[in-house]
Length: 398
Image (cartoon, rainbow, N blue to C red; front, side, top):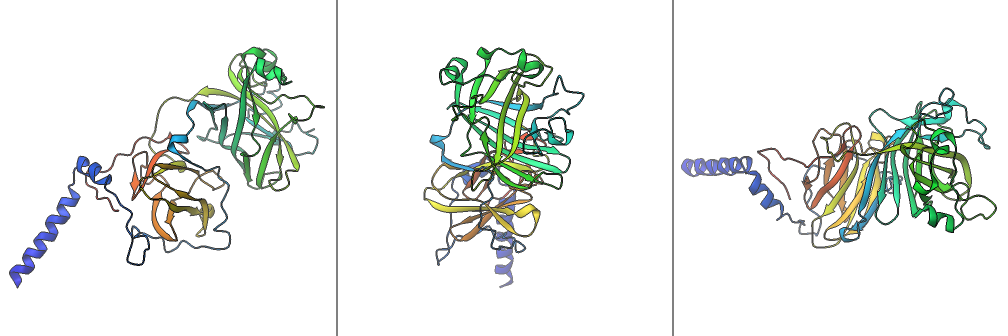
């Protein structure tokens, strides 16, 4: 009996050692065999790491509008170019207005144009990102700040046109400021703010008003009694900037009530753009955007949660049915645009697994939890995440 016990212990040690010393190549092969397991009652078999402190309340099932999208990979839109947003220096009014990328009037008629508190600029290490897509759309994402007020932007633009095309539909080019007055209309591209998909979230004591807002183009492009300036992008596009010929964007809008569409506050965007370096970085700060791919042949309802503003209460950031190779693009719902420490994954009605998103783990493309794989992502201070490199001795779970 003692001999049998020794043999059993020895066998367990051999199994444990083989798991700990599994080569990277063997790991990669095994990852492709990951399955979604169920118990006898049909419930999902979790990773066994459910967070017992996570609590759900009446607000937990309300999706925080983080700008997530969900689409089959085959329908993903190609990116033309990604730009880093640079605050405009507000020339020729640089001595009266601070360098900024966003203006939010505190008065109904916008007569506080020289009030420094109405201007927002890039937070330390958290520049806005402007992206142009092959289908004639563009997006502006990230955070901008004024005092303790943090504004999280998920702004979309549509219907890209050349100057000739823009003129043909009655569009004009609003030239003002140093760079704007020196710009050439023929060098510009023109968009219109896509109010159906744009969201602005404000949080913090210095905000004129906290909450979630819609955004629409100003002047109204559909009103024949007002000019149609749209959103222009190109050399000298940051109207109020001293860098003549530098690429930039200017546009004007209203923050709106997301329910009624009523106009609430006047806003402007005015900033330079520079092509973002084609680089990646380790996870630094907090993860704020992730694209996850569903590596399983059956369709299932998947829900993603994070902790609301890092409290113990869950808040939903995605809810949808996904199938093989479908991708989920999701952004953090905290006021600074991050997920906090974890993203929790539920499949069907059951907890499945969680992704650590506070950069304690150097998460990146290729990192897997069960049948979900990170395709891409960004962190607040590191930008685009580099490919994940697993430790030399690591065991995967399914």
